[in-house]
Length: 65
Image (tube, rainbow, N blue to C red; front, side):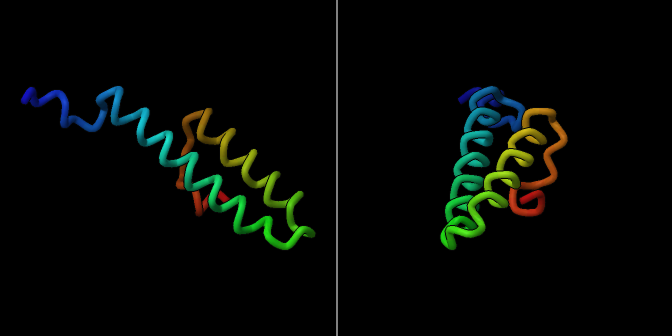
């Protein structure tokens, strides 16, 4: 195997990292939206975390949520 495949900055690994982060964000949003009253706050938090991921200042999914 080529050693480039196992590098952390491989495009495949970066894509799968983003997919995993979005999956964790979806789970956090769903859990925090269970009481219907908090759906607005959890949606706002999910949007803020997604925006910070897009801007590249990712500090962690659950910490930002």
